[in-house]
Length: 328
Image (cartoon, rainbow, N blue to C red):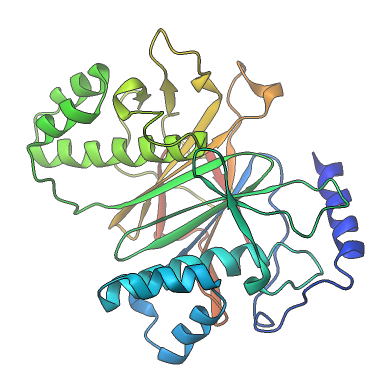
């Protein structure tokens, strides 16, 4: 895998000559491509971004269709969130064009047959480069983008204070598998049960988005997420020390032809207010073997302004999955 990445960087250096070079992204710090079994998780806090000129700068890097989509939205908060989400994707992916400084505005996207967005490899028609995979999720107060190379990724973020219109168990009976419903039933405290449901929902959504076949082809009640002996409420994660949290697994129904055991999860608590789940596919050589920890790099960003490495702080706590936080 490392030799492929080295080859990719070399070929990018050659192939970037004569391409769309950076105009507005000179202040974007470039980062190395994620390595094998590595995921990068970037996020924005919308409330931190109030500068109208900066928001206009983000808007200008969107494609015509993305701009039109924003125009059709009602409400300034909704429009701002849409602009930030698309700008986060573009500025994040532009950072990985090693030594090329591609303008984020020049990036093109396409959708797979199930509607999952993908990078259109417009810069690589003559080269066989590793493909960047990405996925995005957002709430009103946090927008995130996950990135891998050569391995599908799905992410989801949810607010811990999210309230349900229905009773927790009634909601679970509608969307969750029998085993998950049984697990929730065993939790007597109503608030702990609600939080456990949100964790489950976050991981299930990340899994469906990683598989990339759409929610209609992967209904939530057709697979089970296993939380071990229940996830810990907190884990003291020292720098570069592997998470002690329980491993998370996903099981398909008995009659399923999908190999769901090939996926690994990381579950985070961010700022004590959000849950974030990351799901990536294991390499084929590791399938059926003992899971290898996912290397995870976390960054908070205000694109074109500043980036912050989230490492060794209480801003992000691993509460599930086998992972090692990496220093940026």
